[in-house]
Image 1 (cartoon, rainbow, N blue to C red):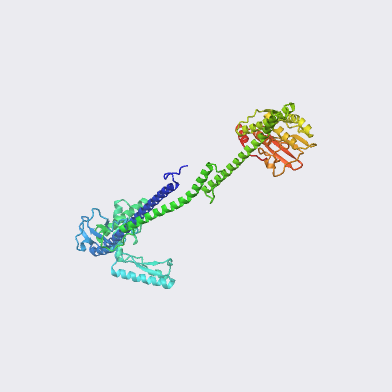
Image 2: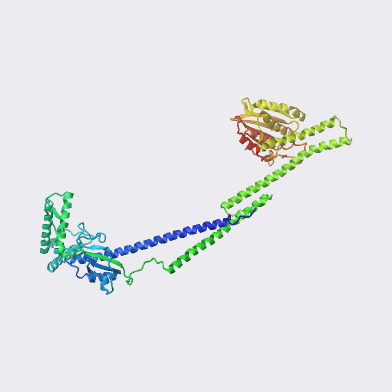
Length: 620
């Protein structure tokens, strides 16, 4: 057997598999790195958006509090230093109001073709300031004529502080005074609602001041004018810009009223806020002190990544080689044992270590080797037994013929009868061997038909009556009335029962009894041959159906037959789909029982398989 080449080596295949797995792992790692990079880029984009939103909100607050862009340059410079971006603010014709690049004195690059946003406090971009926008998209810091003068503001603040002190002293409620963009103070309590009807209610902060009353009246007039153009009834506005109306309160009417209120507010606030401006936010300044990205693919990092990948691949190959060698070692041992087994060494075995698939394969091989050794032992013993069985009659015939040739004994009728007896014995051994060989080869054919069991037992008893009388043994037949018949080969069944009777007569002394019994047990016929002979020892009972086995080890013709009769009985019974068993008590006798199905039908393949088995089969 040639040694497998490198292409068929298991180690090489494992190595290729491990390299493939490593490549897939590296690919997965690369994919993960790409995803990490994308996440880092997304985070930087999010940071850039946050910077843009902060810039937009600061400039929006400036525009909401004054009617022009005066003072925008210092704010732009401060935001540019904080974010590291170039910030430019222009009018609709791209004439600059402020530019962080221009203030540094360096020559600035052209502005992008598209503006980042439009800064208009009356039309806030909800992308940048989603939380500070009402439904009318007007910045809450744009208050216009609602802005309180210092006198009104101070007066209201004094009232608010007095009310906060009252709530604290009387009810123990902590209150904070906050200021709205218009300058009006507002009380803010935490988790506690101030009680109503107390003396603290005497301080009323809800009444509009003179400034607020004028602005509110002007706004109400503008809103009513818009509603009149839409044939809608007028509304009455409150200081918090809610309204009441005597007209319809349907959703459509409410939408019309809200639209007119927004239009009126824009018309009222336009003179008080800065005009819309284009906002340009450029790339970060390389010299600005902003945090760098956590992901870096510099040359040292690439070398480090390549080293890690190479190390992982090398470690994978090393581990695979070690595991592959450990896996191949028992396979090589198994291959060597199989090669010795093929060369005829039936004692070849493999050491079994572990409980994996290879160990189970080794166990199966050892079982096969032991079975082969047992079959070889049986074959050798059978050849010796056949030689012994044939040698005895042949030697007898040869001896008598040589004596007659030399004139030592006369060639009379007595000599011829003796030679005929030995020839018949030889023919009997040959016939038995032929029957067993046919059964082993699956060529034992049965000619089945109806068989009357009671009649068959009487025929067998009649055939052996003379021998029984000569031996002084009583031969009896005992059959049940309901025994009936079965479907089988009458010749082969008589042969099987006859072999049992011959065996019983051989081992039953004079004065003993051999009984043929027939009984019915459901769908099974029980045919038993019982004797009162010498019996069989318990340790010998499992071997009675082995070929050439005899309890008398000397194999004397005076005490035993060829040792094939019971083996033939077993094969014939199995060919009929039945079983045979033996029970015996040493010194009391033996009982051999055939169990045959009344159907008598068994497939040819099953019968052939049963007949081919050369090992004894015990009956339960």
